[in-house]
Length: 262
Image (tube, rainbow, N blue to C red; front, side, top):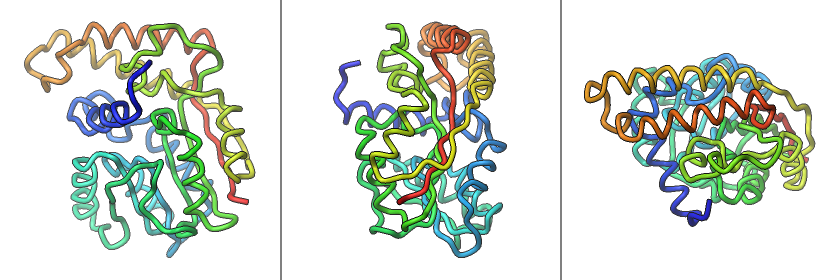
């Protein structure tokens, strides 16, 4: 994958703000859904009045869940202005806009002051950031000492086959995935102490199963569905098939890292 970082960011922001993404992935946009999000929110160990940052907040689903379950204040940032606007509307509709707000911003240059958050949530997004070291440094910068990061992401145990290293594979959170141990090491180098790591590979397999089923429906339904889905259906089915094979072979998985800022 040789596309420039800005191109990768723009493609990912556009893809994940589209109706096609929500139709294919569901409201959570990530493996494990609300159940795994709840686990991450509890790992942050935050309560009412605390400020949590949700990095790459997308439609705002996880930010709203965190506010409901922990009673905290949440600031979501996302590179897509469309996602920021729709997430803001969702917060207002849920009656949570007094505690949840969304900002347009880049994970590699978070638009918040130093030590302004008690917790950082980042779900299935680190793999999309071209400069992961900068993103990790930004997580540490905005956290108070002792503040926690709860991160989930696609993991890759080894060099992936060619079909899983394309721009499309990057947008699908596959091409630049790291080993779980590599993610932990990256965070340690950014100033975090690792609290624990977890494997949730079955959650990725379940999401791929859902996406494959939806793509097969799209192939049959054709123009009855959003136009973004119909274009390139066979190509996306091929990518999903390659990803599922990689999961079976132990090359791809899904993991969680909980860490505290030193």
